[in-house]
Length: 176
Image (tube, rainbow, N blue to C red; front, side):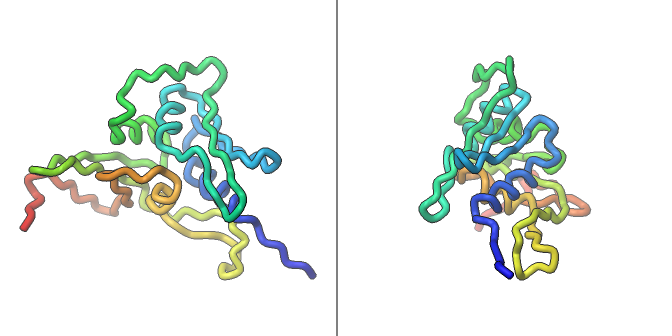
């Protein structure tokens, strides 16, 4: 009996697909012949935001997988918002995705603002053919997938909602 494992780029596709599973405006497909992860996005502004937030490729050893965002036919990708405002980009990119709860920007004295991007409090599972899991699944959180998938930006933090959320105001935060 031969044992074959999924290549890491296919596992990455499963991860991205799990992240957008509850977003009715984003459809994720993987084209193995072209080594291209395709995100078909129904809304033009969401397509612009995702294009800004996602890397253009991902390297797995000597295999490079392109990540391409395709707007729906007729969807305008005219940029009508500031693409330097990462908090706005995230809100536009994740709008309508049931995994996304909210984001909150906290202005701190003498420092850049911090934006917390809060995801649903649930375990996300996707198939990875992991021999360490009886079902071959990976179990993680949306915040972990966001850290792996989206470009790293200073001042943006991904986290998971709590059962009883505590909302912080900038006046609640003190520094030594």
